[in-house]
Length: 93
Image (cartoon, rainbow, N blue to C red):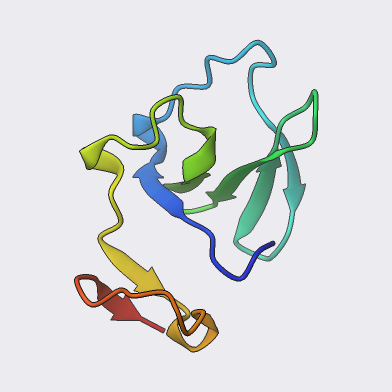
């Protein structure tokens, strides 16, 4: 995974899997979460937590430039590339 990656977190109730493959393929990556992949090409879709949170990779959306998908916070600040400016976002590390 790249050093910088944008996830959009939604509740499970907000997600409807409508693609031709249906539900994504999942791999249990920790005690509380699974990684989701396209069953046809293997591309990263996101992470599905046991709690009601689903994190979807921004690049999987048909229209990723919509204002409603703009980042609200940034995690792992210590891993942030020096050139990446996030002055307008709250941070959590």
